[in-house]
Length: 310
Image (cartoon, rainbow, N blue to C red; front, side, top):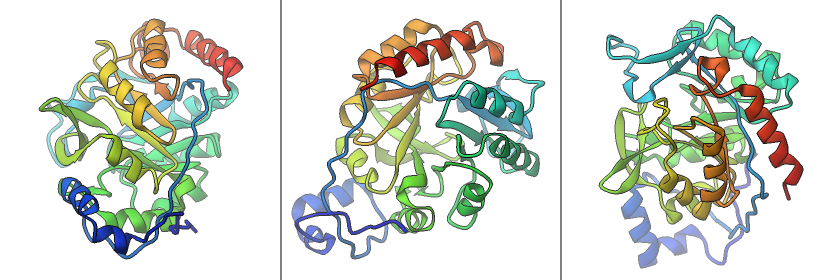
């Protein structure tokens, strides 16, 4: 069970009485903060960028979709832009990643349909302990995916509800699966020169913006962050270097960036902009997803980073 008594000099009850804490809660609009005790964390991140593979599943098929065109499953998909639909199953991709010893990859169900859930579970069975899973995760079903072989569960909309951080849900989920198995998806879009976390298939802006304070706070409940630069995701237009730099400067736990990678040079840009503290995933650009960037070259680049990692 997650030990939420993380070292500090004062309890949240005392923090709540201070003006800075009240201002922080107000700025984040956090719901229902209980009495907990935090302690300061000194978190270190190994130097060396990792490539984290992906398996995006839509209606049971492995697809690469322009994320910003996704709609709720109840709506008509006429505006959905699909870059690629694979003939290979999710399990086949999982076996490929296992063969190449790639860890921390994420399986994302882009819909709550039974076919997508079945395909995701097959992938987890093919590579037990090697993949994270997201899409419709909540405190009731999270452990079932861990039991099926997921190393972590990835969560967005369950925690960022109605435009706010739902602290009660965040706390409950951390208790259920443990901090060490929770990944918070902080995918965001640019709004008024700031990065607002987006939910509900990236269609709804939250009132939570990525900055040093928010990342430090959320890091107390999660093992990793996953951040899609939604404005460039799936468009192969190049990376969002400003977002990568923000993550490299301020994330106190491992973070993976996704969005806009087209060529190997983009991986090097992420390495530099993120100060070798930001991992990367690649989707539509890879040849295994119909793109022009050779998967084997990205794996070779990853191996090179691993060799020089500290």
